[in-house]
Length: 319
Image (cartoon, rainbow, N blue to C red; front, top):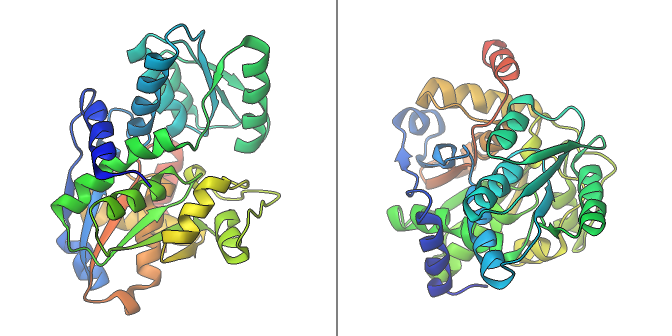
């Protein structure tokens, strides 16, 4: 795991492009859950999601070590792609992003606006990832993975910010996509020598990491059936899995109805726009609130990128 000095060095790269994001203790959420809740607002970054931090650190190393790189390519459902597009544009590197068919219209528009060449392939993230790997070989591009320790070092900066602002948190809930977010929080907790418990949250429709932790090995699923695209992963990363198995306290599964309810609660109690993955931690806390009552809890609001028609439908739904 990275040292505090390494994480602080990565954070300085992040802060050259953006300021730290806020963390607020929201009283209505506290009243609703019986906990003191600190929300880490990663919906306030330049791309509206936490992943920009990892992209900046990855691209910094790439430009230093391979300044003549022809370009980069990666696969995404949206936030990782925005991160790479944003960081690549700052570094003067051409970015090609592969997304599955039917991907978020607004996330696609954002990636193009950051300067990326956008290609569509396959029906889900894993299919797009396979196409991106072929494209990297065909064009001689750098394939940017969705999980690597450079990404974790950058993402850990939000963990450092949260833990330094609220160092006595009992538990932090973190959504799990491919794993950089939760591994970044784990890295920050360990670097600061904290005993804070880290809880990963996945969708019941995309339970690959929960199944893999239980089995002690990578267990892929045939589908990732959830509207929360930030956690819609069917093939876990082996390195991320080992970190999660070794250091996470537990994994909680939440279904789409619970995620949508948490999105509505975020709007009612904080007036924050939250995407599905970003609402997963609150959904998990609500599921465990009887056991967690009276504790000081952190929730990673990982992003706020969701298409307007879908968000409007969720907000106006009953239940």
